[in-house]
Length: 411
Figure (cartoon, helix red, strand yellow):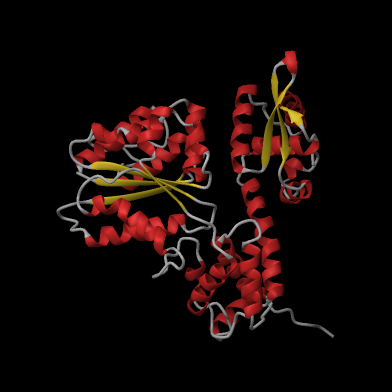
C-alpha cells in the first residue's frame, strides 16, 4: 500500500488559494510598520513634536537624544513625528530630508557615513562632479563627511540625521579615533545653505559617559526618556493590531495575555511581543491550525531566541567564527590565549592566520554583537588582561556551524 506525500510547498500554496490562511496582512506585524495611532505614547509624541517645531517653522531644531529600552516605541515615535512634519511643509520652499541609519547594523564608521550619504543622494559610481561620488571604500572619514556637507549645501537640504543605536556609533568612533559626532554637532557652522540636525536614539542611558566632553553639550541639547510598557499596555497594542493582521476570531485572549507577559519579563518590549505574535501565526498556519493559542506563543518564543543568535553567528566571517569556536572551547580565555588557540585552528582548517592586531579588532567587533563578552582583569604587576566568554550556549554554536564542512574537525 503506497501513501502519497503532499509536497509542503504545494500544500501551503493550496491553502493560500483556498483562503485557508489566518494571516490577513503580514505587514502590520513588521518591525518598521507605523500605525495610524501609537498607543500609550501621547506624552512622548508631544515632547518630540515640541522639540522639532523649529524644523516645521523653517529653522534649525536642537539636537535631541532619546533613550529607552528596546521596543519602547522610540524609533516609531520619531519616524511618525518627522513624517507628519515633512508632509505639512511646502517641499518647494523648504526641503526637508530625513535620513535614518542603525549604527549597530554597520560594521564600521565608514559604512555608517556611506549609508547616510547615499540617502542624501551621493552616488556609488563616478560622476562629473567628483564631490557627489561616494565610493564604498577608499576615502578618509573626513573626506566622506565633507562630501555629505557638500550635497547638503549644493541642494539646500535641511537634513535630519536619525541615528538609531547611537551608542554603537560612539563605540565605532572610539575604535577609529575619528570623532564624527563632534563633526556632526558642529556642521551648521560650516553650512550656509541647508542645515543638519541630529536625533540620537539609544538603549543605554549611560553611553554619554564615554563621549568627548566637547560633544556632550551640543549633542544632548534636549533629552527624552521612554519608559517601558506595562503588561496591560502591550496587550492593548497587540489588540489594536490583531484585527488588521489576522482573520476574525483567530487569536485567543490567552495567547495575547501570554505574549504580553513574556514581553514584560525583562522589560516592556512591545516589539518582541509583536514578533512573537507574528512567528506564532506562521507556526499555526504551518500546522494548519485555525487559532493561535498559548502553545503557539511558547513555540514562537523558543524559535525567535534561537533564530536571532544563529543568524548573527551565520553572518560572521570565517575567521570570526573560528574566534567564537576558540572561546567556546576555552571559557574565560585571555586575548593572548585566544590568538594562540586561533592559530592552531587555522592550521587545522588550512586557513591563512590573520595578524594579532586584526584578531584583537575582530574580538571587539564580535563583542559588539553580544555573542561574546569580555572582562578586564587586573593582574597586579603583570598589568591588565581581557578575558572572554560566550554569552550563548555552546550547543547553539555547534548546531549553527556544524553544517559547514570547514568546522567539522574543530567543533
